[in-house]
Image 1 (cartoon, one colour):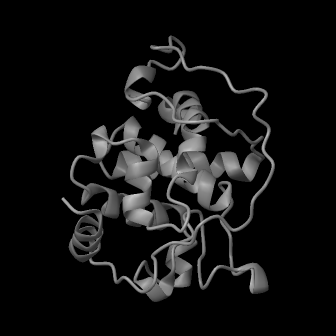
Image 2 (cartoon, rainbow, N blue to C red):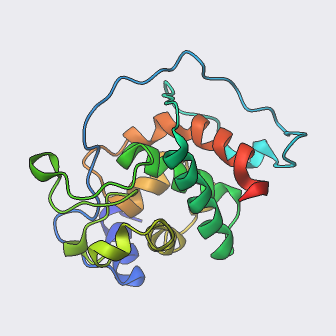
Image 3 (cartoon, one colour):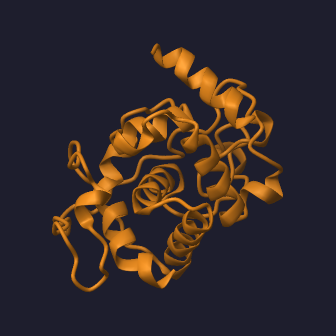
Length: 197
């Protein structure tokens, strides 16, 4: 299926309006610490999460990693909790967290003035003008995650897609390959927090 047709059908089915892109690309480029990147084992004894399910196609390209503060960690847990509440599995959480790492570095961003990309807000940099919800809704981590997952569910075969492809189909970013760099850290965070969120 043509990517443009797929994107339009995703937006139509998810009930989201398309107005020049749903979510912004990265707000800014930062240098990230990739020195502590480590592989995820095929199974993780301490968490019981099957890490092979988290990254079914392996990571693509150079991976980035950032240190998370308590607020960012709380947002990871909120994304995982919303994913579970939506009845989706660990892979959906990896895609969601990887997307939020790219869009906001897991910070629940309000309006950034001149640095803002259009009216993008929250963890996923969703836009009220594009039908994602009100500013209050899309700066609520549970609502924002649920809205993202609603779009993801409409992507045929998302479970078998690379993270960057699944995220891009929902987000329609100006930087379609940028999500790939966060797959390892997203999988590590799901492994760490899935059973205690």
